[in-house]
Length: 274
Image (cartoon, rainbow, N blue to C red; front, top):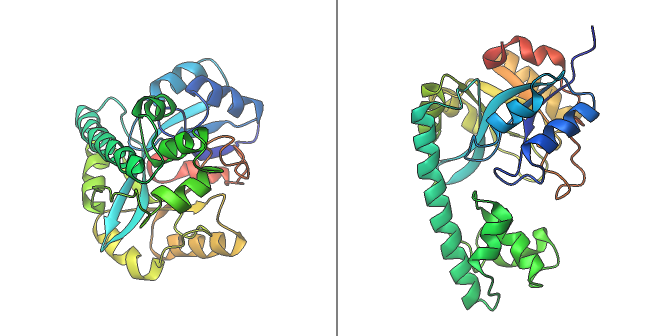
């Protein structure tokens, strides 16, 4: 029996990834992965095409979703696993989120015109392929020559507190849990100790657990060995299931490789993956 190779945090063009579902599946097979989870932001549109592309291959595709949440003004991401991607309640909630996200993105594009960086909504929508967010606005700014790269676009125009930034209307952790649990799934806190934006875990984890968060993403491209050890210990101490993955988006994140995080295969023996 071949060793299991796992990546439970990947994105497709259904949100802000660079690869279509079939391309992601092909890349996973090329890298010798045996299980991936498709965890697009605010949508499950990439799951059924990924399942279809993987049918008859050695790759298992799991259904997931990544949602933003806010607690006391602090924003973070939550991962839902074990969901039914056809759940009517889930699809309705995600549709509402998509509409709000589009309204916010349109308003930011309007603000950019007043900041001397006019870009067309059609250009942004074409990049986003229907699920538009700040990364797509950033790419449009780069294409139009107003920013050197995506990081520059965030730093000068659309990052938190920048001239064209508009706060998002974000769910509470309890609302995310309600949406995911109604679709049969469970929720984990995503990349809590990434280098670029570590969370004060001791402060927020007890509250998140009370809200129904039951898992922790331990392995991640921005978690070093010390972070992984601390999170594994935390998950064990707090009786939480754990997860892990690369957070693969494609060439836009050149240091993040599909399957590049050594997630132990026993991850599949616990929590929503069983």
